[in-house]
Figure 1 (cartoon, rainbow, N blue to C red):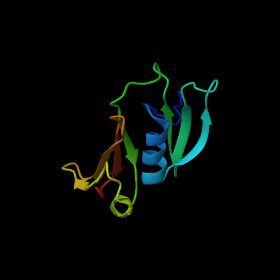
Figure 2: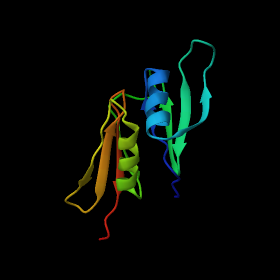
Figure 3: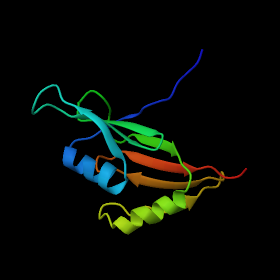
Length: 122
């Protein structure tokens, strides 16, 4: 058996707030988006580097409040970049964890938690 990459689906409720957070604040880009018709829920893919996330307004796709751990390098520099944007709804910090990683946890406007994890040397 061989398993491939995983693409999390995160529940969103407001397209403008999602784009403000994921694109304007975090720096992801929109790869594509889909609606079955006008005034239907949005489903889209955003990415930053090798990190790919699906965001969905569809009721049955996901539950709000999910947590996703994202492998990262340069967490401190990324945190400084985010602080420089002065986004009023998130002021993330970096924590040194007892197990040796450095982690930055950020909640999106819909209660989902993104944890950017830089593994330690050991």
